[in-house]
Length: 341
Image (cartoon, rainbow, N blue to C red; front, side, top):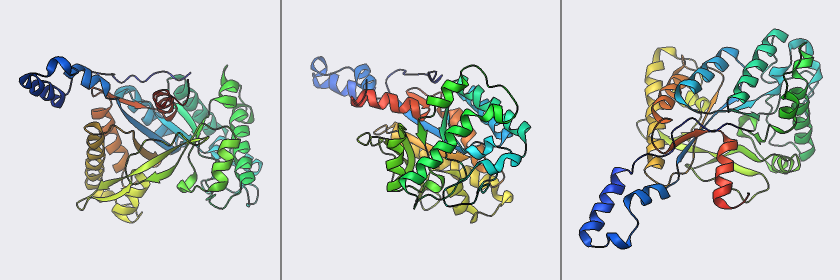
């Protein structure tokens, strides 16, 4: 069971709602019209979904969990399973179409590094965060078949179930149940989705996918066997050109993917301004979930993590805002939609 978000739920009506009620009073229609409080309460909370791909660096595990404690946010960590395997155990992973032991993101250096990561994963799980799947070796699977993806999912499941014992330790009570049924969502490396992936997601029983992209924030598509969340394109920079709301894409735009720490503060401010504008547009508008994606890599001198920390600190405690996991958001939206009990 995922713990509820620590973010406050609802507060007093917005200024616009109070103004609306005042106008109705002057028109003599207030008795036949919902009160300002009712109008405000009919609006759903603004959901903010913050996720991390890879989830490997132990220092950034610690940093993200501290941010969660201070802001009340709950995160989704899309884990790559090769970081549950040491270099010595790399041959146990065999990606579709690759030789055994190959991975685009490498492996953990040793078992001590894996065990530290497992401790962070379990602490996150116990405090209401979500662990999702990012596959294993971070290969581009756009041309993979359904059976290729099912093989990748099976290797992820096996790596998660055996992670403690494979690295010389005993799993905590509850780990087996978590490994068997606790991972319900997926994000494809490179956001590279296709028919083979979507067929495999449904066959594997995953509840949602977070691999697609939309022009702006949209409601997830709940009509498919596996619900589909789409990372939004949001306006960014002096010209307001749209970009995927993810740190790596900002890194490419800002510095052509070359580390430029001398401009870190400039990039941080641009990123924060884009996040704020995207949030305010939904908070004052339709209140569709806002999704922001990150990696466990500090790019451009930490510009994007710094912007995230400032954004979460000022946003997640606001009235009518819940910074939640994908699992939590899906449950809420399914209840509202009537798709599930």
